[in-house]
Amino acid sequence: PLKAVIFDLDGVIADTAVVHHAAWKRLAEEIGVPFDEATGERMKGVDRRGSLEILLQAATRSFTEDEKHALAAHKNDYYRAQIERFGPQDLLPGARSAIEQVRQAGLKVALASASRNAGLLLERLGIADLFDVVVDANRISRSKPDPEIFLAAASALGVAPNECMGVEDAVAGIASIHAAGMAAVGIGQASALAEADLVLPDIAAFDIQMVTTNRTANRR
Ligand code: G6P
Ligand code: MG
Image (cartoon, rainbow, N blue to C red; front, side):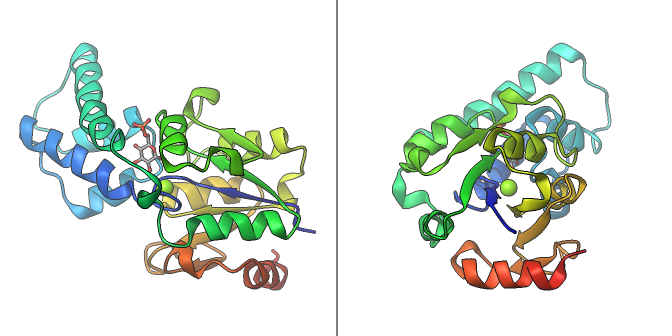
């Protein structure tokens, strides 16, 4: 039986995928590296340093460790400046309701975010107390698509992985959920998230009855 739902944060609950994207784009322009939508899509769910490496694949020169460190810090400064101004209005429509539906169904709720800014963001959004467990990048060592973060969330909840379902907007995130042995709900375009067991256009379409039924039907 399904006992827990583990949500990603950026792009699922909070409207931050665009903020991360804009911050990387600004950095890319400053260092003269091309940055397109497909590159931005590949960065979703990937940690800060991994995202920088994806960006720098298009660079025509190499960067030292110190330079990379500084570039990642710049990007984070741009991002933080926006997040500092966030409030409950920056929850994606239906996000709070989705989490509350899970709780009301008697299931546990966790957050699995690759972001080191997850704690700040949860406070700003006013939803920190809705989660039984929060696992962020500060508590794990291997980035999505590695299953570590979803397995850590299940373990902290005291629930077996096959009793969990993950909700993700990123290709790397869906892969992480599946590698953890969990069913995956994709949030976004079905074409981009073809690996997910079920794809919803946005978190507002999340219905606990529907995803529970679907999970049973699709059990692999
Ligand atoms: C999430 C986002 C990524 C971001 C990562 C690290 O997974 O989807 O776009 O790169 O978090 O975020 P951070 O806030 O630690 O730079
Ligand atoms: Mg995400």
